[in-house]
Amino acid sequence: MKTMELKYGCNPNQKPAKIFVNDGRDLPIKVLSGSPGYINFLDALNGWQLVSELKKATGLPAATSFKHVSPAGAAVGLPLDETLSKIYWVEDLGELSPLASAYARARGADRMSSFGDFIALSDICDVDTARLIKREVSDGVIAPGYEEEALKILMEKKKGNYNVIQIDPEYVPNPIEYKDVFGIRFEQGRNELKIDEELFSKIVTDNTEIPEYAKRDLMIAMITLKYTQSNSVCYVKDGQAIGIGAGQQSRIHCTRLAGSKADNWFLRQSPKVLELQFVEGITRAERDNAIDVYISEDYMDVLEDGKWEKIFQTKPEVFTKEEKKQWLNNMNDVILGSDAFFPFGDNIDRAYKSGVKYIAQPGGSVRDDQVIETCNKYGMVMTFTGIRLFHH
Image (cartoon, rainbow, N blue to C red; front, side, top):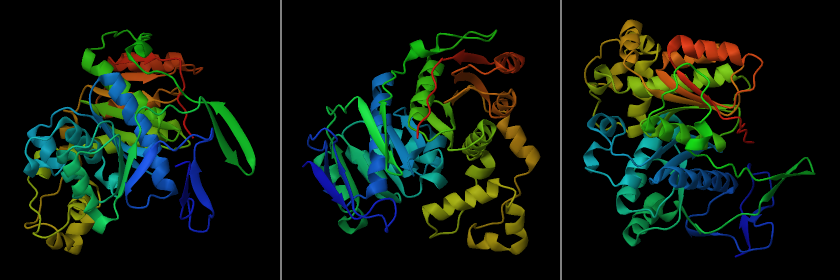
């Protein structure tokens, strides 16, 4: 098929809409189920590029959870420990396949943002992954293939209307890409930058030691940023993004936004959160919302209004600022990547509060010395990649 007609574009009033390959080749995709829309395909194709690069860079199966053309999460298939299995709501599924573990991590890092996501998988979708996807609120999935039983499971989702896309993993796009804005055509070379360990060879701080796991996580951060709407920063720990700040006009706002998401990810692992007892019958999304409120300052309002009885079996103790701060002090060895230079040291100050130890950024600010000095104050390792990764 060379052209696929779509119901409409970004919004229902934007018609006609279709997708096709500029050079006249057949589309490298097949829709196996559902009827994906314009934004679904934007998420699917950006997500596919991200997971393909993660797989090539790390050698591990990869998954991402996309919303509105930016990843809410991205991860590689490392095993889940008992705590992560619990906070990702997969403890009842037993030991997961590496691909399913990758998606559990990608989905679980920021479950609020991942609600209604579009999934991309680097490998053939197996039964473990399909079972996990089936129980989440999601718009669709793209993968290079599907096991027969896995496809059957996915085609039962949404009464047979769940979007399942298969992509040809051998497809290579034209090196020149185009975009029309206000009737004017833009043309540029595709961003074919290869992200590997060599990208992090220019270390500019007093501390120069980057262990192997940190190099892996630095690659995950920068590949994720390559497909995140700019400005963007990405916090990574143990093979997965734990906080992504996308599309902010200010770098410090990106760092704060992503840092708060990373903090929430870690706070969810605290004993006070793990011991919460929920009322029977509430949905997974309601549990996620309740935890988010419990961690936030808004929980005092819930207590005062008596709304907690609709959520929890017993009245939880308040998670105080002091307790949260004490728990967050245990967060360490976090990676931070940035798609452009940090203009001020305040970004590093904020990153330190979320346990950041290793940083990758392009460098090139007139205040690079100040940023380096701030890193040295905290004993961080920072590398200058020399490459900007804006994505629009």
